[in-house]
Amino acid sequence: MSGNLQSTSDAVTCKRLYGQAATGSCGIVIGKARTLLAGASPVPELYINAKDVAEEQSRLTDALALTVREVTKEIESLTHTGHHEVAAIMEAHKLMLEDEEFIVGIRRLIREQKMNAEWAIHQHLNDLRKAFSDVRDDYLKERFQDIWHIGQRLLQKFHRNTPTMMSEEQAASCTSAILVTHDISPAHVIMIWRMGAAGIIVEQGGVNAHSMIVARGIGLPMLMGVNLHGCTIRDGDDIILDAEQCCFIVHPQTSDLLEYRRFMSALGVVAEDLGHFANRPSCSKDGHRMALMANIEFSEELVAVHRCGADGIGLFRTEFMFLRDSQPPDEERQYQQYRDIVEQMHGRPCTFRLLDIGGDKPAMFQLLTGMETEENPALGLRGIRLLLANEDVLRTQLRALLRCSTHGRMQIMIPMVNQPEEVTAVRQYMKQCADELGINNELPLGCMIETPAAALIADELAQVSDFFSIGSNDLIQYTLAADRESVHCRDYYNASHPAIYRLIEMTVQAARQAGIPVAVCGELAGNTEWTETFLNFGVDALSMATHRILAVRNLLSRLRYVPVQV
Ligand code: PEP
Ligand code: MG
Image (cartoon, rainbow, N blue to C red; front, side):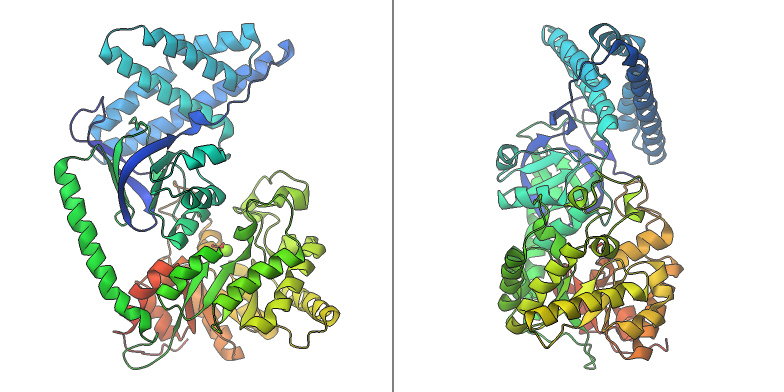
């Protein structure tokens, strides 16, 4: 379910508007809005043939039906949670979607001007905007905002899976600002962070969407799963973005600002206190060690890794380095990048995960498969499946990693493993590559346990693996059939489901019996509600977003190790 909005003064003008999000990264920021909503992304403008008019009209009908359904659900949920003012705004939006005059104008453009549906909607909105700009009445002018919003929402139905496009120039305009947008890709999160954005508010997205993982990794305050349809946020509006409590306030009052400044300084004190744990060992009160490692995607994150005294890198998501590349990077470029990371870790261990492309990480997917996307990408050609189908890509990466092996402590991890043959195949490729390079020491090779199948046959996988790392993000998604990216599945994507505990237990048990180390590297690793369970299971390492390490180490230092018989 997406977040809700609550206006405490004037519902129409959206003064002092409080909103909630489905999920947040970390931190709080007070800043000015820079909006880049779906309407700002280019609308395809195509002339259609006369014979295609009927089809275009039916695309419009489908989009309208979808939007009405969505709005109806939101109204129900808003009413249920007592947000009657916002529900009333949404009711007005719904009426507009059913308003013959509004629809007839769009249909006429399709029929008479032979415009495609998206262009016709956009054109009609622009015509209305002109008509409303001559109106003197402020109230009526405000009404146009409603029409505009509902039109944008309708337009989104035509490019539902396309994150809002963003040019370098648009990204640069976010410097010091809080970007408000419909959807955002991980690459764009990085782009605008590098440009100095203060934070991001995104309409789409679920708990473990990759854009959110990236934001957590770099410590950028971000909210996802925010329902913005009942409000208008304009460029320059003041916003408090609170990613700690998953909420935001547009047009904050003086009392909000005072309260938040106090809260931010309290958080600063807590952070300072936690800072003492940066130099402490990662062990329980009675001295049982559980390494606390970092999950990272970019070399820029190493500063934070050192600041919190991480025991190593437990998950380096290599595909993120290449998100913006159209070609797979060559061996030399990869070697330089991996070497840079390993050297900067000064002997602490680094686990590099082989490219996990496909599914929700589309980098280079089209180039490698010739397909733009798949019907069901999460269940498609991704991770190790894609690598085994693209032997050259796999060999190039293995060679680059093997060449780094003399520069530090490293190991290699395989994503999305389901069967032992996948591990043995990679091992054979690694051996061949090592022979070609004249390297005697192959690197330890482990697999991620992130599907129910992998957990269920963990005993067999343990026979061919040097270590395990439990990827709870995907394990939850695949076990519970709940999309990790979906706002609507938030309540179903539930780590507390007993099936998750059991699969983790089985994995740890298999690792113990085979005598190989087992780590957890999904977001659960940084969740303090699970620290005691992982400790008592005898998990060897937890790898998490760097900003979670000190809090987990603090808790760990207060716990006693009570081994659980798994
Ligand atoms: C996981 O699935 O838990 C994991 C760590 O991998 P990713 O989040 O990159 O899919
Ligand atoms: Mg995964």
